Length: 355
Image 1 (cartoon, one colour):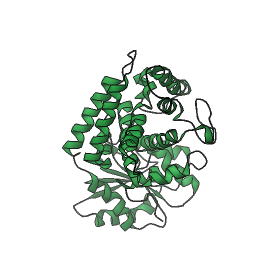
Image 2 (spheres, one colour; image 1 turned 90 degrees about the vertical axis):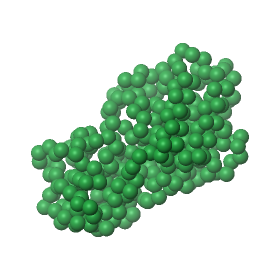
Image 3 (cartoon, helix red, strand yellow; image 1 turned 120 degrees about the horizontal axis):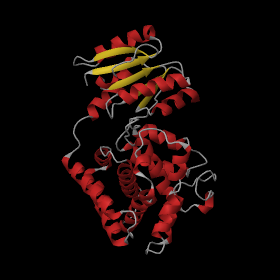
Image 4 (cartoon, helix red, strand yellow; image 1 turned 60 degrees about the vertical axis):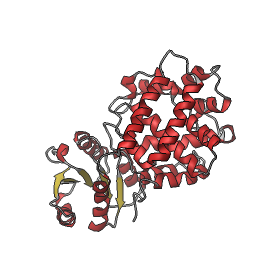
């Protein structure tokens, strides 16, 4: 890591922090201050972005997002929050922060947060890269539009991912899958890997591990009928595009019905976007109407979406994403969220906001 871009709405206030950070990070690190309301910065040359912003307006969010969009893909974003408030936290979430730090903070804490990304950088282990690439090919060969989906290849793909995650570990699996440009491949294989790790963390037997991992592999099958231009759109979907995407649970259910898949797998495919409070879709199910297997997959699904690496946002850290899950009280099963914590901690052990 050679260059940090410190984005500030008050450069005078941030000057001391920039000097301390550059001095504290050994190895000739250059920490450049960028005035959020000044000229455009060369964010593409930065190895990390840090925001020191008090203004949480829509304009501030838009300006920071533009800078993030010009940065190299995967550039980490650390958001400093001078006030610990719900609005400040939403600011970090809206920006897709890799990590947030709440006031009062000192340069040592910021150094550790930024330095962690340098420590975590480096090539994905060869075994994880090969396994994830093979899994992507398997996924692409099984799930093809207008072709019936047979259960035997799905079972074989499930076993492959489960074995790969056991051998490489969930952290390296996630890093390997985050390299994928295709949003559907990345998301589905993240969810499947997380489900495999979750099953082992829960102490489930081989058959139950297979069941949970298989459900994850199948959960988004309906997306093969969603145009790739929508799935891979580098930005927020409009209302019409969102309506098309929201049809995928029903599409997937209709694809698998009558193909030999059991009712629990069909329930996952149809209901993984349902919420305990009835705010989900497509059937607005509530509480006891949502099976346990669906609840497990829903947590893996949301977590994967938060840690995905997309062209328009860096991935959240594991703990930042887990904090979002904890904040979904009343919508997610709290026992499932708590049980998922070791999976999140396996590859990002720090909390995003450790005031």
